[in-house]
Length: 400
Image 1: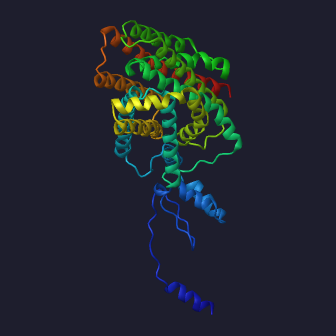
Image 2 (image 1 turned 180 degrees about the horizontal axis):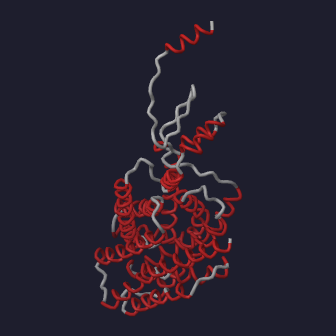
Image 3 (image 1 turned 90 degrees about the vertical axis):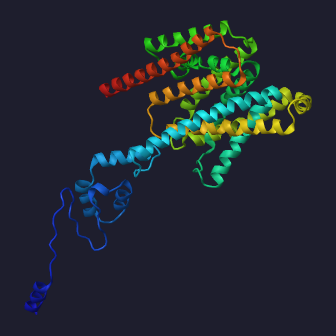
């Protein structure tokens, strides 16, 4: 019997298998491992849930290359497919930046036209928050974007952030109605000054001297621009500054109160903040200017007509959400903070220049010089803050 079995075994044809460099030969009746160069995180996760410890050990020890896993995780974290080529990723990033700039320019023009025809910033601010909330609900219902998982603790923390967002958004909208869009944006470029000043007492953060020095050209540039600004108005200037304070406090308390909710991405967070802000903005809009809506509407019908008024309000509302969403989509491509700061600086330049060309605002040479200095100062601040963050990380790593 044994002789017969040996005879049969010797009669079986054997296939010669050439060893492949870097690939572990694993024999299993139900599993076949792909070459190491093709293993992905999904494959590793599948193997880790199997009841084959020897197979897991083989995959972990021989088949998985750390550099490959790091690259895959980096690609997934950046929101890009691991099958994307560098050219595809770069083309997508350029497309998102163009969309971000374009949406912001369209919003600022439509928003200014809406405020000119219907000078009720509380109503328009509420409308824009409502459109943003409806846009996100559409994305969630159609599953075009993942639905965020929130709890009562998160929502309570969100209400604080949303309160400051409401202040910042309404104050900005009011300032855009009281001054030229170009000058309002120059004043809003002073936001880093409040960020450095308020982050210390609230977050207990300290900044090196070069971060404080980077604020000097911002303040100087805003001052130069204000000296020859034809549309300058103290009410508009104060509202733009109030908007800076509101947005800085929103960012600070978002970092302080929502820092543990890393699973909620930027697009979802902005949508949730917009929805929560409606709880403040809608009743306050009725209280602050509800009596003005009817006469303002009648005047707008006479001056621009119902269709034009509704069109500008709708465009402003939609592009208010889109430019914010596109900015988060740019961030999701894995760009560095410095790269994003450069993009944000150039976006402000594009908005200022386009608004001047569209509305034909008279701008003196001193205005242009001041605007350039202030905007360049925001870029220097971004570089200085990034350098300070890197130094803090290095110091923390050395003491660990």
